[in-house]
Length: 255
Ligand code: IYR
Image 1 (tube, rainbow, N blue to C red):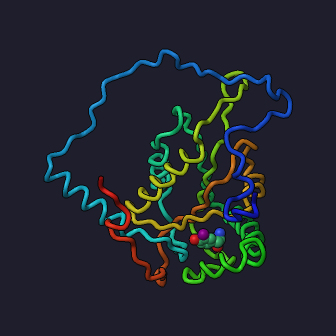
Image 2 (cartoon, rainbow, N blue to C red):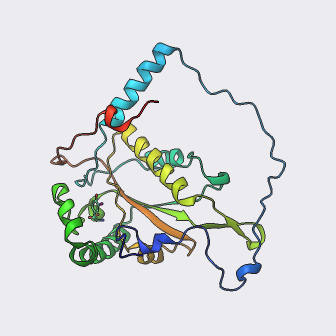
Image 3 (cartoon, protein in one colour):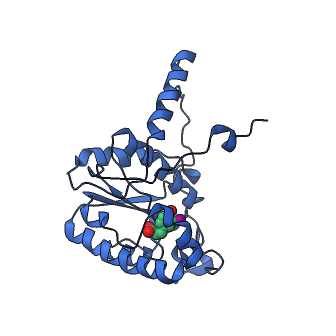
């Protein structure tokens, strides 16, 4: 229940199975039209060992510099960069290749402000009531509050929805297997793609804001908000908590 796990957004708890109001049990799954999809040869680049070592170090060094940043500059970001970052996220693997994601890019100032109003309204209730004292205390070191200036300031807000099911040919419902983890993987790849171009974000999961945000963004009911990412350059006076990461020995077991 939501009492036991207040951090699980109620709107996200329903996953692949949503009963249809009209057709109910009688509804059939769309088998898809790719029964005889050909399989083709695949040969990705292969690197010499030296080159692998260097590339693995370089990629780690780059991603190890990623931080969640809550102070974002209003400086414009080229739209094509955002497009490419989302293309990258769209390369993620997904259950039965259903690609169960929708990336909503918001740059319109009025739309950003409407989002901010909803998020701050709900987050104030979260911090004051829903989260409880222990959770709020555990977050003290991060210094977050329900005031989210970055929602007005960031040049782009990216709202990532998981499609709990798809609509196949003839309006038949298509099962989106593992849709939540599929979209979560794509979010991870998106974070790496942002880091690769020197942009910052914070992985916010606005608790209980999903339905209202979905409505103002005019997304259909099969889509559930998974993540809200403000995207931009860090502001000049941006700060982050002085956190460290667990060393390899604490996160890896080699058998
Ligand atoms: N969603 C709230 C609270 C919050 C929760 C966790 I767990 C964090 O790591 C950070 C914040 C907010 O965005 O302020």
